[in-house]
Structure formats: C-alpha cells, structure tokens
Image (cartoon, rainbow, N blue to C red; front, side, top):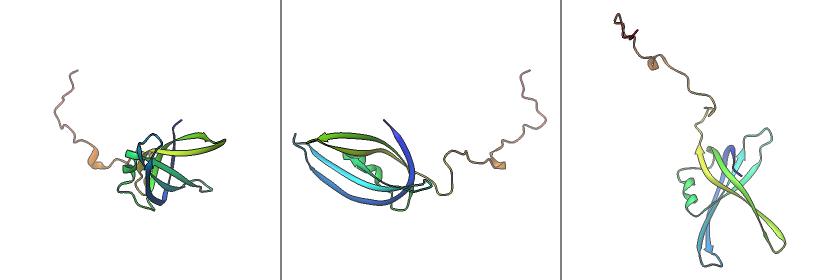
Length: 120
C-alpha cells in the first residue's frame, strides 16, 4: 500500500538507534506533518536507516509532499502501527503541483521570416 499526503513539517525529532534481537544495528528518525485538510491533522512519520537522509536540508515549517506506506505488526497480543515515509518532495511556496507553469513571450520561438521551410 502506497499513499501520499501534503502538509507542513511541524517537528523533526532526534535520531534513535539500537540493535535488533538478530544483532543488526538500526536507526530511525520521526517527523510530524500537519496536513493541509479542512480540519488539519498531525501525522507522525518514521524513516528507517538510509531513508533518514530524506530529511537533510528540510526544516520545520516547510511544505512537503510525503509518499508513505502503512504497516502493522503484532507483539504479545497487541498491534503496533508504523507510517513509513519513503519519499519527501519539497513544495515550492505559492505554486500548485497540479498546474503547469504559465508561458511567457520569451518561450515562443522566433518566426522563420519570409523563408518557407515546409517540405510540402
């Protein structure tokens, strides 16, 4: 399952690390996003190991689009959920990602003049 949400980074938490039962080292970092919905929600996303680098250069208050997956696992009869971010795209302020940019007069190529280059 893969989903996307747009919003503003509200908080970037510190990196946590440890060693699994299998002896593998792991790192995780979480960040909180406030959605752009009519009734904004706070969502805490998790980044594991090499995905932590996705937050480099991003700060609280920046608008982003987050691609993520949701997973659940059972431990001792209880279910735990993760919202795992796997892509973060910075959104430019004031620009909608769905609307192409407008053309300017400089984008139009110059006319060929009197010469007719058409092959027919």
